[in-house]
Length: 502
Image 1 (cartoon, helix red, strand yellow):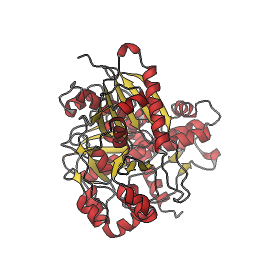
Image 2 (tube, helix red, strand yellow):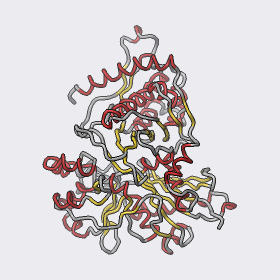
Image 3 (tube, one colour):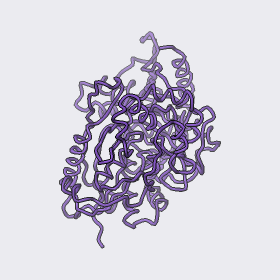
Image 4 (cartoon, one colour):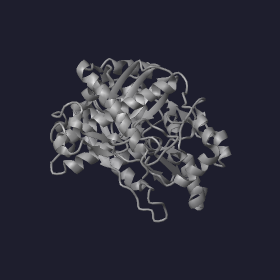
């Protein structure tokens, strides 16, 4: 049978994207819809949630637009693969009505999560590999239990965002393993529901089916076909958590291999042969989409989001602030003329989460500096800050796992800035493999669909295929030597800033 194109749906942190890939792995059409959040008068100011019907309508429109923009010669979509941001979750009642749909940025459960961690902190981390609890589904369930008891009493099904998308498309309830782990609902060691922990938290046990990445979760229903324009019966696979899909898209499959998905945020994950936990509970541990692998994670935070904010603030007079800022950064030299940026985390510490000072710093008085600080220097300082933070997190993972990084791969939207990959390579002083396309998550999600279609025996073979398309970048010895000193200075300043009380 001739296979048609593949539709990838990525419910990311910044927006939902649809891509149609041809059989060779080329994106031939794309569309996107922005997230729109509800106002909830009875919820805390940091709460975020979606209007489920508005969300579904936007998804259907994006699917139709993407399909309309694809060459008709490709034929109809032959497989659909969905991925999503981690920690996003949807609650359904017994009739399949959405009670709540929330993104990873929903922080309504800060107090409920703090109460869980006060009593069960070590146990939660030991079982789920994740802290602090307010980010995760058990704390959100407790918030509903305490703040909206009637709604809580109606909750019958808990799905991550990608699980919910697959359910909307197929009518089949399924929970993908990596996403369940990133929602705080999995015993990551056994890759089964953490029902023992849930009982201790006085929350309902999970009983739904857990499915692996790269298998068919269901087929497009007649109702979904009418809403989206897709053909009835098309297989749907839940590819997994977006970062882990990014690893797959870069061919990061072997123990000790590291992947950096530098997009809205910059999570750094190392593949491990079993869960690796930090004694200080600083890092996360989760499941790889490969069912015989795990990941240790240390994130540099919302680096891409911060870079976009700086672009809008400093380059707001330009038609494309992000692109113009990225171009300017390439005209400033190593060290950014003395400017230093602190745009997010240094080394991740999820055992002690809080606000710290950040910003842009440069030598004063300005007439004593090496030269007048210009916008291009601020732009480069921001990119260097991201590179320094990524290095700090790679080094932290090496310490936690006791394993040196055997290879480092880079993908994500930040690689669209021509200067960033080169800066990172020189800051690391190590070889880096660069993704063939910036959107490594979309590539990995596509590879899950191709595995469903039989083009690969399994996801490990798909990962090997992706790795063959990576491009090798090597550091410049002189720049790397300079950045070694700049990095040490950035670490010292970062530690000083953390000691300043807000």
